[in-house]
Amino acid sequence: MKMTAERRALDKIFRRRDRYEIPDWQREEVWDTGKKQRLIDSILRGWKLPKLYFVKISDSEYEVVDGQQRLLAIFEFCSNELALSKDSSKLFGGTLYRDIPQKTADLFDDFEIEYDVIEDAKDEELKEFFLRLQEGLPLTSSEKLNAVHSKLRDYCRTTSKHPFFKEVVAISDTRYSHFDISSKVATVEIEGPETGLRFDDIKAVFESQSNFSSTSAVAKRIKTALDFLYSAFKDEGSALRTRTVVQSLITLACKLVATGRYEGMEHEIRKFYEAFASALTRQIEMGQAATDSDYILFQRSVNANVKGGAKMRHQVLLRKLFTLSPSLADIFDPTIIAESGVSGRVDALGDAIAKMIDQINKKYAAVKGDDLFKATNKTTQALVRIRKVVKNLDEYSALIDDLYFLFREAAGSRLENNWPVSFADINDLRTDLRHDVDHGTANKVRSKRRKIGKTFDKYAGAGTPDTIDPTKFPLVQSNLMGAIEGDLRALLVKAL
Image (cartoon, rainbow, N blue to C red; front, side, top):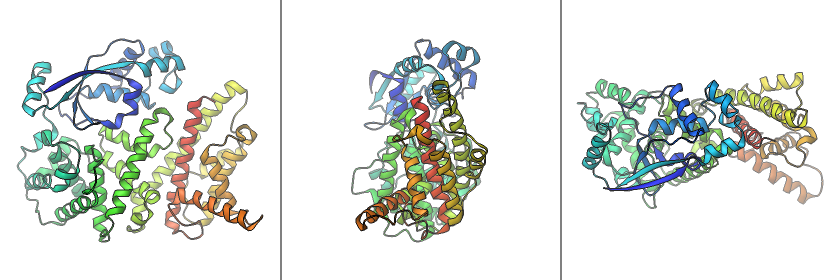
C-alpha cells in the first residue's frame, strides 16, 4: 500500500468534484446545517482542517473514504445551497458564497486542504489502516448486501461479472464495487427510478425479492442492456469511471432495450454518452460560471446520494438525449417526454429566471441607479406565462414573444452589442416565426435560414417549428429556458 501526501485549493476540488466518488457508508454521521456552517466558518477564518483520505481508483478518480461530509458541505457552499450562520454572515459580509466580498471569496477558493492518496492497497490493508486510524474502516453497502440471503443478490453477483464490468468499466472491483453498481441497477429496474439507493433501500428489495428469477423480464432486460453496452463500448478506451454514472447509463440502456428498437444503435449510445460526459465535465470545471443547470443537477445527485437521485439523473439524461442524439431519442414513444420531468423542469426554470432577474436588477441598480431589465405589469404576466408548458406551435410562438419582450425589449440598449448567446438566439427564433428572413439577395436569405435553422436545432435536436412533433415543444422550451437561466447566472456572477 502506497500513501502520498498532497494539498489542493478548494476551487480546484470544486471544479473537479466529478472525480471524487462519495460512497454510502452506513455508519457515517450525516451533518446537520449547523455543523456544515461551522466548517465553512472555520475555512473562512483560515483555520486548519483535519486531513482527508482518498483511495485512487483510476488515473483521475478517487473514492473518498474519510472526509465525505466535509467535502459535501464545501460543495454545497460553493453551489450557493448552504447559507452562513447569522454571525458568520455579519463577520464575512454575505450569506451565500455569491454574496461575500470578492477578496473573501478568493481566500476561500485558495484555501488548501491536506489529504493522503492511497494507492495499490489490498482490502485487508485498508481495513487495518483505518482500524488504527478511527476504530475501523466502515463496511460499504455492497459488503453488507453481499451477506443478505436472496436470489436477487445471487443474480446481481453473477451480473457483476459481465464482460461490460470486467473489460469496459474503468472502475476497479475493490470492496464489491461492481456488485454495488449491479445491485443499484436491479433495484431501479424493480422499484422504478424514484426509489432510494442507500443500503436500507436496497436491502429491503433484496429481502422482498428473495425468490427472484434469473429468467424474469427484469433479469433479461438488464442482461440485454449489458450486452448492448458491451458491444457499444468494447473497442475503445472507456470513460466510464464513476459508479453512479455507470448505473445511470445502464438504467438508460434498459429503457432503450424495453422499446425493442435498440439493435444497431450501439454507435449512437456511445456517441451520446461521450457528448454528455464531455459537456458534464466542462460545466463542472466552470465552477460558479456554469451555464447549464441540468448538468449541475446531475452532478449534485451524484455527490449527495439522496433519495430521488436516480430519478433526477435519469430525467436529465432523457432531456439531453433529445438534443445530443435525436436519432436515439426517436426510438422512444412520446410518453418518454413526460418521463423526462420536463413539466417540473420548466416550472423550476421559470421560478429561477424570475428570481435571477430580480437579483440582477438589484445589483445593477446599486451601481447604475436603474434596473437592467425594465419591470412593468407586462413583465409580471410574461414571467407567469413562460412557466406554463407549451404544447403546440401557437403556444410556442407566444412563448418566444414573451421571451423576446423579457430579454430583448426590457433590456433595451443596456446590453447592446453584448447580448448573451441565448438572448441572441431568442431574436433568431422570433425572426424565423415572423418570416423576416425572406428579403435581400438569394445568398443572404440562404445564409440567414441556415443560421436560424442551426439555432432551432440547438434546442430541438432537429426539425423546424412547423415540422417537429408537437409533443417535443416542451423540450424545446425547457432547453431554451435552461440556456437563459445559465446566461442570467453568468450575468449575476460578473456582478455587472
